[in-house]
Length: 283
Image (cartoon, rainbow, N blue to C red; front, side):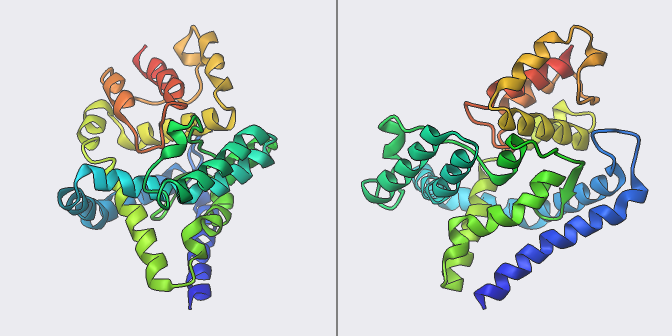
């Protein structure tokens, strides 16, 4: 049963990629978004799913569980991903960071009570954020077109191709007990969405075009991650706003939105990328 479940989820990603190829006729002249017609439709579909199903579940989750419990759940979920993060760091040649990730997993899984406590961070082992898409980018694989996948949201073709491996390598998919695995996956989804509650109003106020804002922000932060922050220096050279990459029609309120947007995985390492996008939109 669990093998069928795994194959079905991988098949969903493959189906989405096929849809992307069939949507080529709906392409536009935007070099960053040649599949914009399809992407906007899928973006709207995902927002409706979020509005009807995911967001209400996240609101109940936040209302029922106190903040310390939610923090502990987030620690456990983060701990489950550390081995895969460590492997990707090593594949990128960052062996010190990779060993740090494996040590984080060992410390938090034992002394941290199966990850409930993040003692590794307190011990000087910082949390990293790596996946196969970033590894492929470091190996020189081009990002390809921007695409919005059903349920999974924004991706590039490179990230979409890497998604099945990222999913299969993530710890919950190796849990043989199907109800337990599905509970972990559902909790991961609802917990991740609960972190974003309260950001929608800021985003709506900031963006004349919500779709374009999310697209440009996603592309910027993914490029920043692949380059481990080196791309930030590129934007210092753009004196002419028309010369900056990643166009978009967003008003001056983007300053507030960028600082509060956490849905795209921004942590301490991604803040400079957000600032670069903020400068581009508010000149």
